[in-house]
Length: 211
Image (cartoon, rainbow, N blue to C red; front, side, top):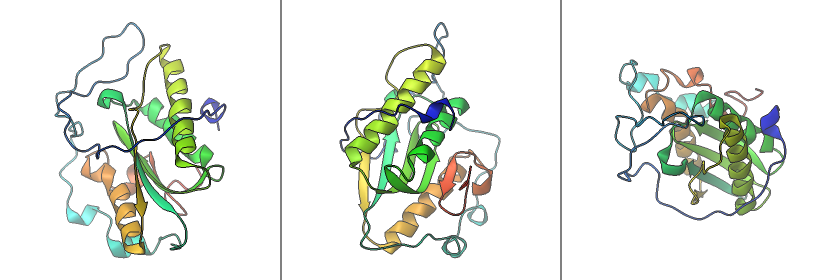
């Protein structure tokens, strides 16, 4: 891993409402010092519009397609669906998504087993089987990525909301549903036409597994 793969620190985790619920605040982009942040024209909770056509059912991931790639689910293991949201729903730039994506993969096998992850414009989702406490895992991800992104921008400031959301996955059915949700997220947000086209999407043993 590059400079985004060292000196990861630690913090705390709280519970929050789903980040897709409207907050009434506009999203802004992260800019370097000296630049004015731009306010997006879309409502909070919506992704910026693109020229991609509306998503049809055929372009989404079917259960049968996913089951051919499904990692082995063990009921005795502790699986968590975790969501982190940027501070004030600030929009992430591609290089910042790279840093976050690399950090999640760097911690895979060290603090958790990573089953799936996606970095979207102002939040991320991931499914993990933790080997460390959730509070330490969230602190490591937030602290390190905030430090690296601020260093890129030559500034100081918050990158993530203090609160995070974690949900226990209690069955194989729910596990499959959450995987499908993560894989289809970039398509539903009009960020890609197909799940294989999206750079910041990971599924164990399937998508971007050895990158």
